[in-house]
Length: 243
Image (cartoon, rainbow, N blue to C red; front, side, top):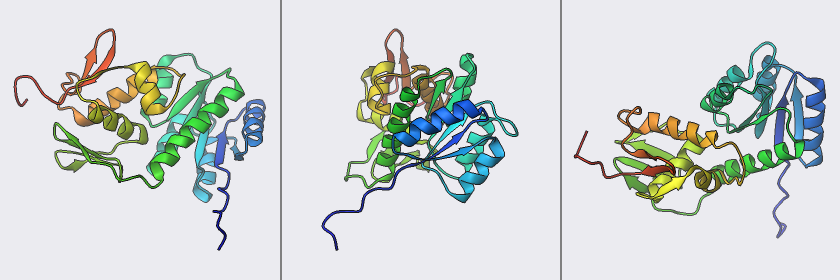
């Protein structure tokens, strides 16, 4: 047996875009960056290719013939966790937020720098592989009836397992590790996402999604508090006793 482990195969990237020019540029940059790239021109073809050979990450255009990117993302996520970066030509923030809410890990707005897209792909893949790989033994995090086990990446609320996405789990674990501390959105983006750049609405959306899963009343959160002018604070001690 060789003393050296076999080289890791290149990550498989599925690019889904009906614009031939954009698809050529994106696949070209990703290919030159060492990824194994496939292209699908519409939603049904994307789902078929993903079923035939599951990609490590999908670069997904929002506006597609057949099925739009939001529906494709929903259906991909129904089959299991898969990193998704959305491409959108729209300037409406609601469209970008909707993409994050259906499970996209990140988005890039057209026109974009292909090099920036490659950096986003590398960042999302790093986090995804770290989550999927063997983890060093770590203490299960507990507070306010919540648990997060970094080893198994399982989280519970009052004993019931929480259906958290990759980022939602990381965000919850970070809050549980730092109770009572106010964090800016920039800090959360660096610590949880591992990004030094990006749209901070990504953090806002994921905090909202996490609140919907752990708060008794997400409209009046008591665990993840908004610290006006700063960001967010996880407060496991609830004023006034039990709700």
